[in-house]
Image (cartoon, rainbow, N blue to C red; front, top):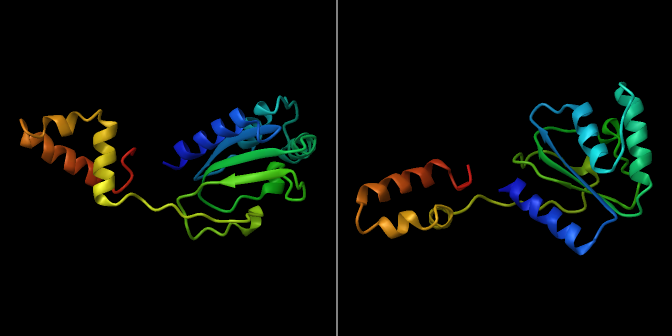
Length: 166
C-alpha cells in the first residue's frame, strides 16, 4: 500500500513536472547506505567511482544541490537514518523528502518533515471489497455457486489484516 502510493505520487510528479528531479529508493529494515546512495545517484545520472561512503555522500549532496527543486522518496524506513551520511542535506531548501514507514513511533523530525500523515489499514469490509476488486470480482461472481470460495476469500482477506495487497 505505501509503496504503491508513493509510486503513484512519483508518477504524478513526473507527469506534472512538479520537480526538476526525482529519486526514489527503498531503505528496508537493515539500511545499506552504499546501495541507497547508488540508487539515488543512478536516478540523477551520477556515477560513483569512490568506495568510501563519506566521499560518495559529499558527491551526492553536491549533485542534489545542483537541482533547484528535487524530491527524494525514501520508502520503507524502519529505523532512524542519518540523511547526512547518505548525502541528503537538510539545508537544501529545494530538496523535499517523502518518507514512508510502517513504524508510526519512528521520529521523523530528523528528516525535516513538515507534516506526518498516518494512513491506517483498511476496515474489514473495505479490505474485503478491495480484495474482491483485485481478484477481478471472481470471488463476488462465484459467491452464489460456491460458498467454499466465499469462505476462502474471507479467510484470505482476514489474513491480510487490512493490507489486501499483502
